[in-house]
Image (cartoon, rainbow, N blue to C red):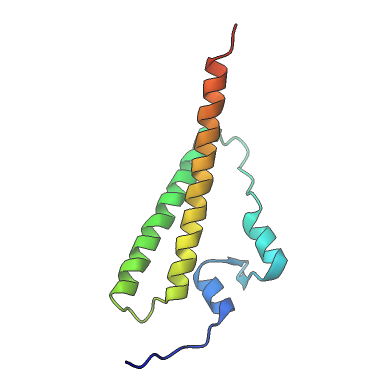
Length: 117
């Protein structure tokens, strides 16, 4: 069995994974800072709306990962292992962040309910 390796193009993989700002792929520390910077909610948006949007986003990312995994298993030449792995990591980070927010909300609720009046 012969294994052929393709040269890895990080800029192309980042662009396929959706890591771009204004059409330009992100690179280095500036890219990392832009990816981790929180986005401001529009004026008048409630916390519930923001949470709903975040949950929908995480769900969409996980569905996309499932699709990419299926396509990779079916040897679709348009889907690369790198793209799939990056998408998996993004979905995992999004899920972990959502889980931490949920845990903090439950903890805050418990503290409020246990307060003496």
